[in-house]
Image (cartoon, rainbow, N blue to C red; front, top):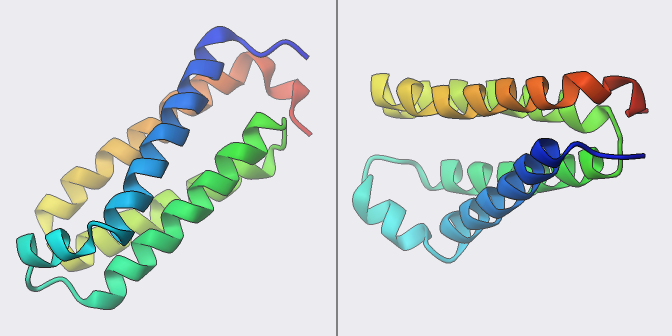
Length: 117
């Protein structure tokens, strides 16, 4: 199956972004704790697990598995909710970027949706 170039680039961008997020939530968790002292430690762990799940979902999309898209949607909603609860308005605003990212992914997948199983 031929994957459109934009979709390929977007999936690669998502992989790089999620690897950076995973790095930030694991090896950079001390910096997060210093920057956001009121952030509970369990939240950093939840966000790190979310980054792993996101990576898994993007790999599923790379392998033409539709379920990866649904996982990304669900996780984006969970992360947006957590950000809103933990960070207030700033968290909701930051979460809009991940929801916009899912929207861009949808638009990139739409022309080849029938190729996903």
